[in-house]
Length: 259
Image 1 (spheres, rainbow, N blue to C red):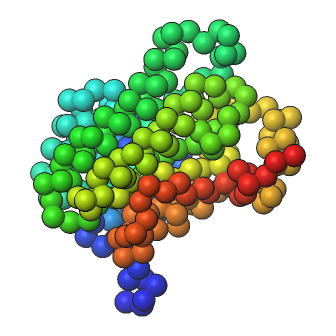
Image 2 (image 1 turned 180 degrees about the horizontal axis):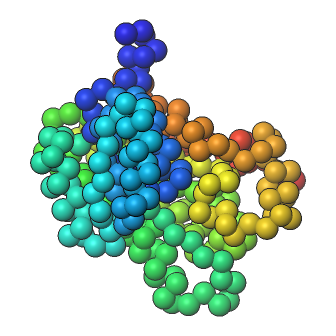
């Protein structure tokens, strides 16, 4: 094995990818599998999960599906129990569940507010807490990667509560990194920019797309597989063992720009 291969080799590791039924986290799951991980795709849609599992198996990787709901503590606890029993270990958690809406800010209902925060923030916190309880009982380095959002750094129109919930998640990640470093649990935020496969981009019209591209130095949207490199860096203890509490942007320079 070459030096570079050894830095990012995740052979015999087990990664749980919550939200892995989606396009972006599904591609992250594929990248983890290609690096040697056994991957657990977790979400609510088994049919979508099977598409991701098929792609992983076609790449000679290993994967299986476990249904879970981040709004239910018992569901996440069951996820940990199932994976630890079936795979014998968990080394990496990708926290990628998220929802959005496009309601004008003055018309956002209490129900919409609570629903978005319940998934994007409460669900992520709940999941981190439950997995950390498991990680603390194991004497090995572990990595939690929370999937943030570019709107959590710079608010965007039509992303009001989504922006707020992701900003809260970014802050939470730093706090968790500080609290859990003594247990060799690293916690970081991976922040995608604009990707055509992202669920949030169903809310973009042509004029908005043009505006985004003008503010993106790379002058394009990202490809989902361009999230893999940053994920492997954060997941690998050999390559990223001193990285915790960080925000890694994969955004084509969007956040570096202004008018």
